[in-house]
Image (cartoon, rainbow, N blue to C red; front, side, top):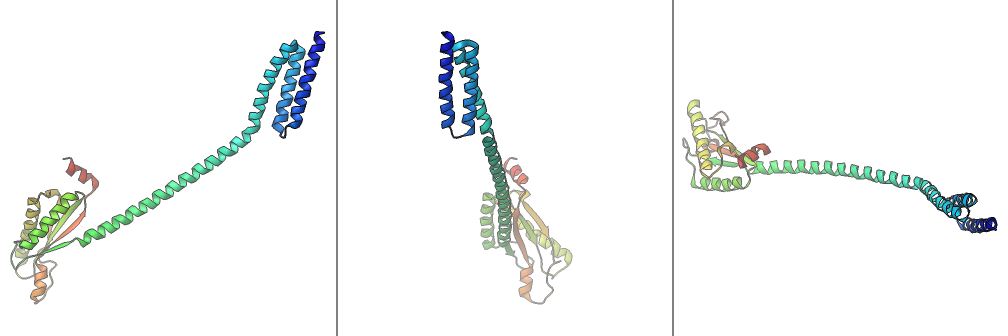
Length: 237
């Protein structure tokens, strides 16, 4: 009687599984049904109804393993697509960084051009080294600008017209530069941000025209950028 019940359970399970397998539309479902039925049948033969249940559980586990194995190619494809997208994103980042570097370089060039246009020319009287009231005001405004922009420094170039001896004109150009330097220092500009060069009459134009001489008696003021390490040192002495 017990064997008949066991056979009946097996046939019932077989018919249900066969129906499920026929209704499934993919290979994975057929594989899972076959494993479930095989494991259940073996369990039933080995241990009756209890063996059938154990076999069914084992069959279900194996079926899930088969399903996982069948889904692995799709997972690998998704992973490959993700890696491709990651490579594309990294390349886009590199391109953006290169573009940013180009923009920074371009902005630096424009900044240097702007600094060149901020050049001042301070004129002096014949044989003199005193600054005019107008030039003092201009240097005060420049000092405010330099204080607000610690990344900038200044270069002073002094000149003299060709009249007089070369030694006298050299000393005169030095005095003119010293006058400008002293005023900038009085306006709280650090001395290490001020570069001075005196040219005497070495670059003067030889001419009898007094207007040309006037343009030789001057100190030019040029701004330029200080290396970042020097800026930090100035802020944190």
